[in-house]
Image (tube, rainbow, N blue to C red; front, side, top):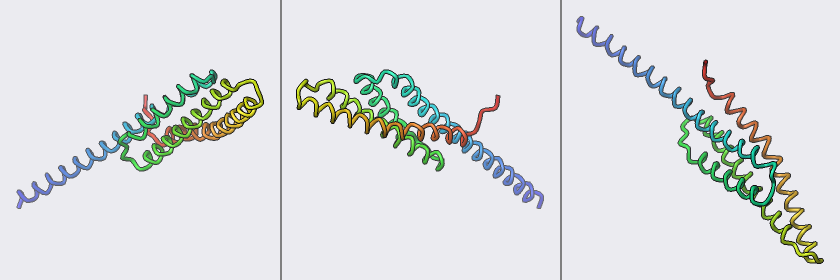
Length: 162
């Protein structure tokens, strides 16, 4: 009878320890996923801040390519937490959107630079200007969403205690 009681006590201890371990693993997984996702989103925002003021064709193309690369990296992260998956999906869409609109902007700037000085060139220049304005407006719409996304991520993720 006492052996049975010891065995039950032992089983409960094992179940408790395993439960605590799984709980701790899920917390550390969430923390690790938060760290990865936050770092990648911050990397994208840093690129935007550092390269945006230049706004020439080559820096715009470079920023577009690098943001697309970051979007792909974010997309391929192995995120298990459902809330973080939503943030991951939104971040991917936002960085891809920024990348695409920057690419359009770079193409418009290139077309404007190549426009000949004649009536046809004037049309080309006006089309390039219109495309650049449209791309710029779309970029302006996405930028605050990206900042809000990072803020949501920071609010959701556990804070490190110092």
